[in-house]
Length: 161
Image 1: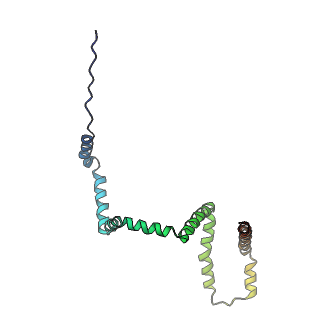
Image 2: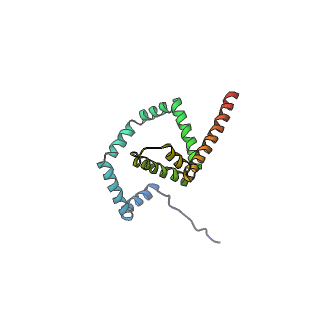
Image 3: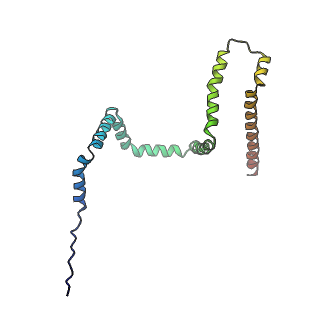
């Protein structure tokens, strides 16, 4: 009759595995270890490690102050406003912002360059009826209409409560 083959698996020693990996690590990761030492030295030279050590020592006190400040009505409103603005800014195409932010320095430069010239009513009127000015005025009026509509709806909600 056949005899079973005994299977004996030696018990696994996780510490020995870790020690083996640790002994081989400097050879396998020499460049990464040297780069990490360089980063650590630069953090030490700039005082970042000292700041982190101080922050860790005072972490409970800092956390307590942050929590106390976050509980104020102003902080709660600020956080709500930030969340609201995140949603609003996320819905606006970057090209639209680019147009607005390019127009600001351009308009300031034009206004300061023409500072010495007298401003006339007819000159302003001529500039106001230009194609670009009318387009800007139309966008401003569209914004004001939407703003007024939302003001009216928020006033009606306030009266209902």
